[in-house]
Every structure is written in structure tokens, then in C-alpha cells.
Length: 379
Image (cartoon, rainbow, N blue to C red; front, side, top):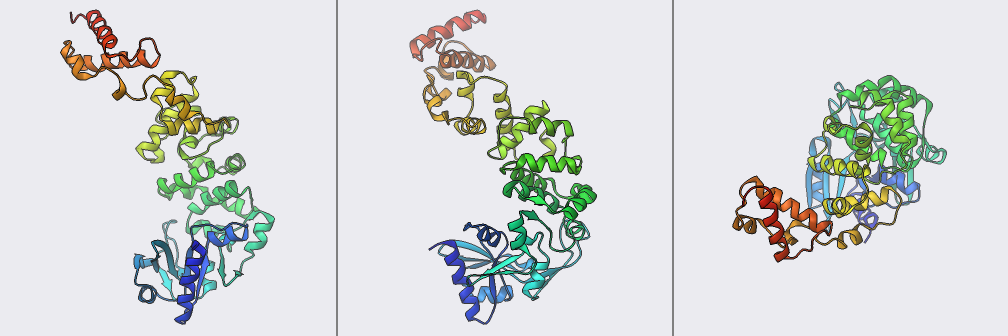
């Protein structure tokens, strides 16, 4: 069964109990655009306790917001009670949520018209002109953009993200509101802003969205993002293909290894972005191939629009990890190496083998190690 068929099961069960239920949000937008997404959310007139009574395998994952996760054949679906939201005094989250409202009231709280449609029994419920905006390739808020962005400033970043992903344009009043309220992004948790920025950078129209961001002055409220830096990224021929490659472009052009710190990304993302940015500076010589993971090499090729030769290059090396070296720390100890000297000795032998200056032969490596130690005054 497809995700849509599982979702229909949930809707039918709720309907049979006297409730209403719809597929909502991005899944409906993608359906109207001709796609069938796997990530499907549902909204219902029933309260969370009523939903859980109908579906034995369900978890109250966001009960304070009316959300229950229903699990069918190991497939999870978020089912949320129709709700309206109060004021957003912190420009991030509603001060209170009211459950048990109508579908129209539920749709009114959503960000953009294209995300404020519902689907049931083959019919799209479109109360705010979302289908027309999709046809016109326009991103428009539900109601006043000043109100929507004032409620949750992250919606400004979401507008640019959808602009990039769909190659759409921003409606004029939305542009004005984003420019006027851009400083509110500084109130949003940086992790949330960074995720939207990553998604924007990975969209096919990211240059268009980045340019618009600068034109409206939104970049001024993002850490370490100057007009000059954005222009350098815009003129880079490489194309981001994932989050790591997006950050690598900025790191490379910023020429600052600490540029990414205020963005609050994971250590893994920061490390891999730095490695990839450094790779832009060099040729793919054996040492760079050896010291770079296959996944990062693959990203490198994809960013350049080249055939992915990452696996082939890795397999062509004399060794792929230090564990394959025919000489280890115990051998170094036997020859009299101590402390940090062992690390430097192994690194030297490793480099010579990778560069094919000497073969990966234990006898030859041992003799080379003796020469190295003699130069260091051990013998």
C-alpha cells in the first residue's frame, strides 16, 4: 500500500466514527503540482483522545497542540485536531491554541496559500486561492503577510526556501513585509533559521532566492552574511547538492574557518563542510583523495556536475586507511619510538605509501622507519 492509501484508511475510520478528516499542508501542495509525496499530515475535527480511541497504535506526540501520531503497519502519520492559534508574543510560537474549530479556521492559521489546502475523497478544498497561486507560481500568505510574519518570523525564511525549491516569485506585499520585519529573524532559534537556509541553498533556484534576500536586506539579519560574500557565492560555478556543500561554499568564500560557528550546526556538518571547502583549494591528488571520505568526494563531483569517480579513486589508492599500513604502533615501539614520535613516524610512512614512493611492504616499511628514527637521533 502507498502512503496515500494508508492515509485514506485513517480518514475513512475517522469518517465512520462521525468525524471529519483531511490530508493537509505540503502533501496537498505537492499533489496539486503533480507529485505524490510520502510525508503526509492529516487534520481532523476529532479531539486527540477520540483519535487515540480509534487507533490502538497511536502516540500523543504533541498533545498540547492537538497532535497524535497514528501508526499503521509501521507507517507513522501525524493527525492534528483542527485548531486556531492566539497571539505570538515572542514571534515564534502561539501563546495559546484552541482545539475544536472548523476546517476554515484551521486553514487560516497556516503560512502560505499553497500550504493552506486540504484533500479528501479526490477533492481539493481550497479556501484561499492556493491552486491559482501555484498556477501563477506566486508565494502569497494566508491573509496579511505582516500578521503572518509577525506571528512567526521563520515564515520569512520559509518563503525564500519555497522560492528556491519551486522557482516561484514572492508576491509584492509579501516582499514588503519581509523587508520590514526581517529583523524579527534575530528572535528565532538559529538552528531553525539554519535548516530553512540549508533547504533554500539546495533548491534549483537558490541563486534567485539568494539575490532576492539581498535585495530585500534579509541577509543583514543572518550571521556573518555580507552582500560581498553572497555575491561571491552567487558567481561560483559549483552547485550545492546538500547541506554540507551549501555551507562549504560560504566557508570557502568567507576564508574564515570559524564562519559557520554562529549558525549552530552539528560538529559533523561543520567538519565535513570545512573538509569540502579545503578541497576546492586543491587538486584531487592522492593525499587529498586518501584523507577525504567517499561521501564528501562524491559531493565534490556532484557539485561540479562531473561523473562521480569517488569510489574508483578510493579503490585506486595503495591503502585506504592507516589500518592497512604494513607497520603499526607496536612496530614503532619495538624500534625505540616513544610518545608523539610514533604518531609522526606513522604519518610519514603512511604518506609515502599513499604517494607510492615506497610499497606497502612490512620489511621495507621497517627499514624506512629505522632511517626516519636515525634522522631523529633515536639511534
